[in-house]
Image: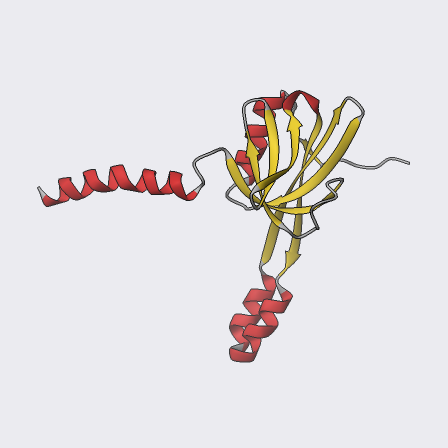
Amino acid sequence: MVKRVLAAILCIFVPTFAFAAHGGDNGYKVIYDGGSVQQVKAGTSAELIIDPNQIRLHLGKDDVVTIPAAAVTEISYGQDVHRRVGAAIGLAVVSFGIGALMALTKSKKHYVGLTWADGDKKGGFAMQCSKNDYRGVLTALEGITGKKAVDSDAMTVKN
């Protein structure tokens, strides 16, 4: 009986807390990586809010930029893979074996880019998304814009 009550409580509270931790509105924590938004410096943490008809980059208490979904011209996606050399050196001081293993691991950063043209207002920016959120960001952006995300890693430049 106790197990059933505990299971019922967990079934109610765990989804509630998970939803509340995410902000409750279609917001994703991102790091602005650069682009045409003048008010934001690269490396600044922000929130990307995806509404049914617009995309907002929210910083502090204000929306820095609002993009109508119909104005989005391209959604791109890319990854940056690098070795964890700095962390490996730090661990090698403590234990050479762990440091050597750490040097062999890789970390990925996931980037999503948006470009838009709304009349005479054109712009674009890139943002870094967490490994848990980037798929959700891409799916939400594709859903409201009707555009398919382009994998920038798969694109090749031809001269």
